[in-house]
Amino acid sequence: MTHSLLLNLRNLVCGYQGHRVVQQISLHLNAGDIGCLLGPSGCGKTTTLRAIAGFEPVQEGEIQLAGEVISCAGFTLAPEKRRIGMVFQDYALFPHLTVAENVAFGIRKHPQRERITAELLELVKLSHLAQRYPHELSGGQQQRVALARALAPEPQLLLLDEPFSNLDVELRRKLSHEVRDILKARGTSAVLVTHDQEEAFAVSDHVGVFRNGHLEQWDTPYNLYHEPLTPFVASFVGQGYFIRGQLLTPETVQTELGVIQGNRAYTCPTGSSVEVLLRPDDIVYTPASELKATITGKTFLGASTFYRLQLPTGSPLEAIFPSHIDHLPGEQVGISVAAEHLVIFPTGDNSSLEPEPASSGVRRYSEAS
Ligand SMILES: Nc1ncnc2c1ncn2[C@@H]1O[C@H](COP(=O)(O)OP(=O)(O)OP(=O)(O)O)[C@@H](O)[C@H]1O
Image 1 (cartoon, rainbow, N blue to C red):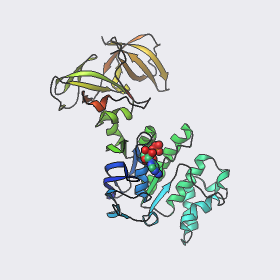
Image 2 (cartoon, helix red, strand yellow):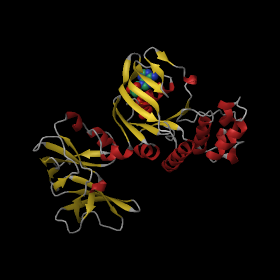
Image 3 (cartoon, rainbow, N blue to C red):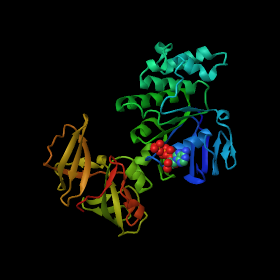
Image 4 (tube, rainbow, N blue to C red):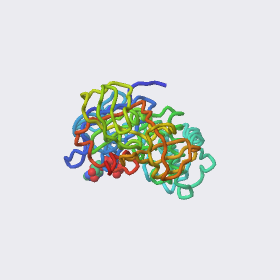
């Protein structure tokens, strides 16, 4: 597999009626990789995807595909000349064509169209439904037809706009893994738009977190979770709480959970106030610990149990313990912190104190603190 640069967005600005919706976005995707644009509703993900497809003009900056400029101010290469395929949220299948005819639509004049169609139907596990019509298929099956149809002309890049959002949670999860396997099996590069973090992580090699038209971080799922560059990324990706602390030395922070050791030197001045990100997997069940927390709620997840905890000061925390550790709400448990990748941000950054919309994301501090 090659790792050459395929898609390169350089300082991209685009929007509607002169209004700048997407502001100075830069990102790149290597051939064979899957990227994802993630962020809350209205932050500019679809606008960026449409600009890559050639449906929206670019106001500033440029888009390069395989080294060629396909969009810049005053120039937009027509969508059909880009060798870019698209899969939409609503499948957009042709209702009067069979499954096989839908898949073959973009390669009607190709001498090998029957062979290619049969191969793709096998890839998406729909060979047995080749003669059905779209209305005779489930939503998940329709989306697999749409994927096969988009792959048939062998696009250089596939764009997927919220492809699973019409499906129920279980099917979304299953299909998102399947789609990754299919794209990887063919070495197809793709960019996906979603506001579902789990989906972004399941499918992508790189994820871009958008906020108000800006790209806050373009990185691997691992780095977004463990090394978020901004409080917003920390909040949008994953769960947990921020607690307040004070930097004791470049590597250690004094908090109400005691002194927490990070694995690097932090750049803010010793003695400064910081906020420390504690994710549920940073909190370890430690019966002998002097540090106790009260269980305020729990959710059994099968292999593990998700506990909502409260510290003696009233600060809330979340923790994931192996599910054989079974305690009732109201009980006290000993805990310790094992935050290998300790994430801290200096306080006083006003943007970091905005309330975050994601109810499943990171909460900032206790109401009681
Ligand atoms: N055709 C249009 N004309 C004018 N404004 C638009 C148009 N399409 C989108 N917008 C605006 O641009 C902003 C970004 O929209 P966009 O669809 O890119 O967001 P998004 O991140 O994809 O959101 P969602 O997750 O809800 O689809 C929004 O404020 C939206 O109202």
